Image 1 (spheres, one colour):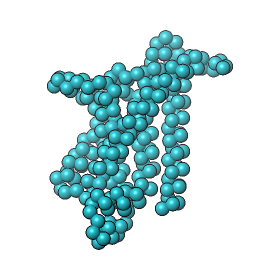
Image 2 (cartoon, one colour):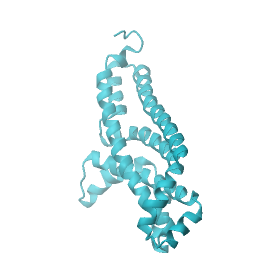
Image 3 (cartoon, one colour):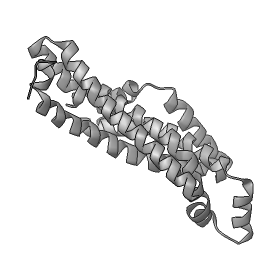
Image 4 (cartoon, one colour):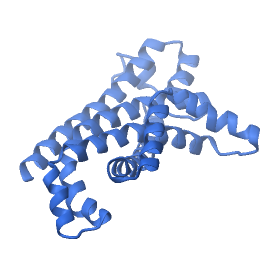
Length: 219
């Protein structure tokens, strides 16, 4: 392999790819949990009682108003003060999931509200309970509205994983710092890492565009 261009990066490419797998793992697990949070709380924010709606509203506004770093510090550094100890990976997943879940809640709430009111009224007239109505009628149709912002949020989540190195998790950005300390070539190293992040995010954006067109066409 010709490593004349950005040698500090390409000489350590296998090291970075291993770190990228950790980044993907954190992103996928956090996204899965955040999506579940978003669906459940999104539905609750539309059909729940006043107390539940108030809880969801508070969760959304508080979590969206906090940086990811603050959540990571809470789970990894603050909880031990109360004799609650969790591994750094779980702390990262918890912080990323709750932060992303707040945005996903708003995404699904907006997607549900974007549907014509007649869809819900028709389900109610057929005697459907809330769970059946949401599962069989509302959520499948609301996906076409939720896909674009969900893809954008996934891209933000992937880039957001770069901060978990602050709680000693080895991932792509952390690996870049390690190599930079030995090669003293930060431009080469982080220029290459930026390309990896770009490839992840561009692929997701392209996939989102394909899914959006296909789902809109089908439905």
